Amino acid sequence: MRKVVCFHLAVVTATVLSLSACSQKPAPVAAQAVPATAAPAAASVAFAIQPGAKLPWQMLRSIDGHEVRLTPGKRQLLIFFATWCGDSKRAMTQLMASDLVRQQDLQIIGIGREEQIPALQKFRGDYQLNFALVADPDRALYQQVASKGIPQLVTVGADGNIRQVLLGEVPDAIAQLHW
Image 1: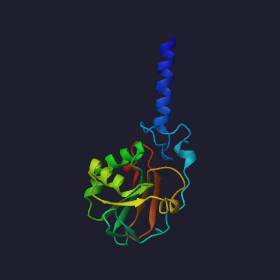
Image 2: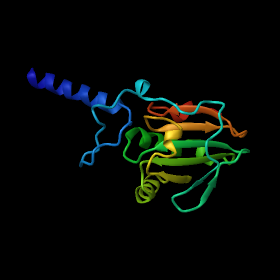
Image 3: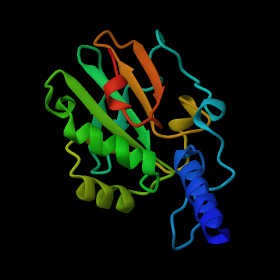
Image 4: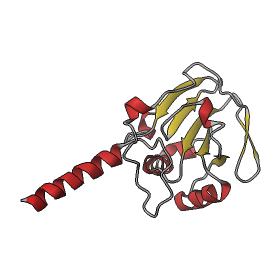
């Protein structure tokens, strides 16, 4: 009986941890577990930009050294993510399986929060990403969008106005995007 109770407690704990937000970078240990102190998504997110606003940048630099211009006339999807975050990995997998990556009128840019170029290059290969990635090692870009939680998904209309800011810690985040 005691083994059954311990097993159920372990399952419940694992489930709660897997549903926690990727709001903090995990400590450098062998197992990449979500910290037990991470707050649930609803309580941990605060957006710095709102629908109707303009993006605070018009040009970013990709991990390949190319300029990425954010100009009106094309819809945009910005994804703030981390290579170690399970929710970010799920969102990228869903994105690559969606038809969004094939839409010619949509510019997709992934922004790696607290990430260095080599890690983003490896992640791009592992997930077969076909869009520009930008390193944000010191959260300079991320801080202009939110204070906690990843992935953050920002949709921008062809007019250059932000349409949606979504915390992508839900199983169907990509399906919830709108312009």
